[in-house]
Length: 267
Image 1: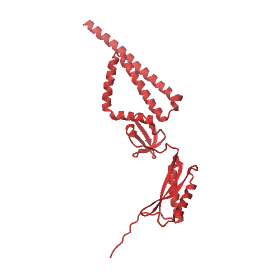
Image 2: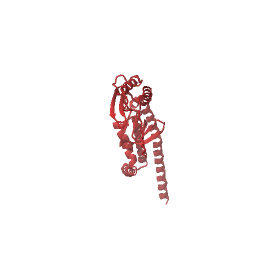
Image 3: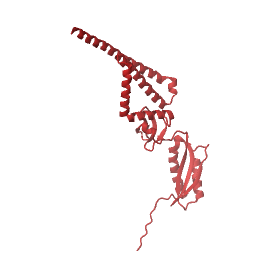
């Protein structure tokens, strides 16, 4: 019995020693990783990357290094590497089946990083949500809406939807549609719209403008007025133009028609 108890005590002491070493490996390893990641953030090469790429690369490296430290700590306990590989494979398969959504989000994040349909700071519209991209991480992309709400969109969803990047180009074509009565003088309407465009502070001089009769509507003439503006000025230019058009049309007696219903009563 004494020999058995001695063997048990020896085994426990040996295991406790290995466990202590494994814990120290984890603590020291994680501290070293945190130190290295802080150094990486301050590195010149890392800072040359786009902000979206920085976040993604930082997350991937941090997780990968911590997994490696965890494997080293487990092997220190005396568990064979083949068993660890088998365990990781089995766990990976189980997690893959249980977390299909999470894996699709990671794949979506990789797709976004590779093809770069947008970056941090761009204003995008998914037809369901729209806002400025504040962050792109492994699992999701965060948008900030015009009214300061934060929208978190899974990368898997985002990578498989139609995205309109409204600030990808420095300039945008502003196209305003205007309706006037059939009684209106076409030349006069075009003259007024041209004057409004030429006086706009948002108009880019290097680009051509256009004012034209676009369509004969059911109850009105439909004109188009186009000018190029800087992307960041698109909405201010739009709002200004709509307001000035209404004021100038009122001043010049140009009627903007609205739906009307004529009711005839028979005796």
